Image 1 (cartoon, one colour):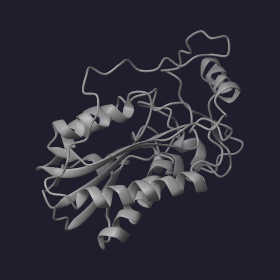
Image 2: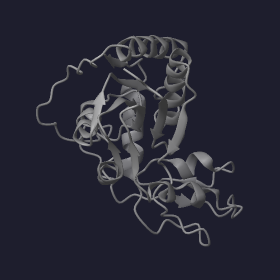
Image 3: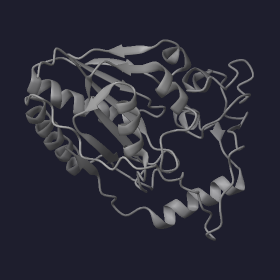
Length: 270
């Protein structure tokens, strides 16, 4: 089949998903002799317009995994803003070394519903947004080697005409994962929001500029809207001024550090 453009669209608050999307797209571009074009979908202003792709485009779409599914606050925007016209696609999910659960199937089905033909799909492990100890060093050399192989297989498949369909379970999706505390009971931190250590804050407003939900007031540096716990504000602050103290959230982080430091396996489907 004819591919004239590689388009890379990603939601990536802490840039881990972007890193993997760019690497896979770069490997595809090298094999297809095309330079990828990038369409960030992270900041509120980047999600204001529709993104439409044609039959000679190849869309690499990458999303992080939140609680074993696609981020629930982003799902309506994925569905309402990203469309294909019989467009080949490569759905990629990035999970924080626990599990991708239903997220990859969910992204494949969403893209199919919006006019895309998935040529292959993958879930790759990355460092968890909540803790450097969970998924430490991921993606590593082994992951990048697997991404290279994935891109090579995709390039071979895309050369076929017609494009063979992706063999995937299309039954009803399962529920979101329930975060747990160290005692095994549900961790309830939906209303948790980042706090500010004013002794460290320089009022640079980097946290407000980076917040993917536009929820941090740049004047007060307080969180005034929806928080998806992406940790973008915590990780961007060079002074360590942003933090969470919600006890259920902290207990969940401790549970992850106790149980999910082992090397999680990636998933590749062609």
